[in-house]
Image (tube, rainbow, N blue to C red):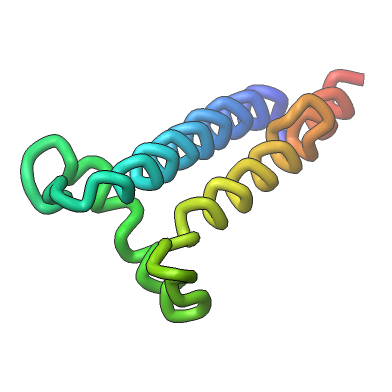
Length: 101
């Protein structure tokens, strides 16, 4: 794989995973405000990328004591993936370094 493609992949995945982390963090904060309607206005930008993923998570891990832990789980998973793939010692960074030498 060419070095330019690796840099583009690194940048794209970094931005995508950061965006998903931010969206799930906002979704987590919004759980404290149950009156916010996620189906209207700006909140659709938060609801659309997270709803289907959280529905699957809720089937596997139901809310504990009325608290939906799905956003916390996904923030952890996405952070782990970001570190493994595009972190300082991530697989893509190592591939870029290998392609340089």
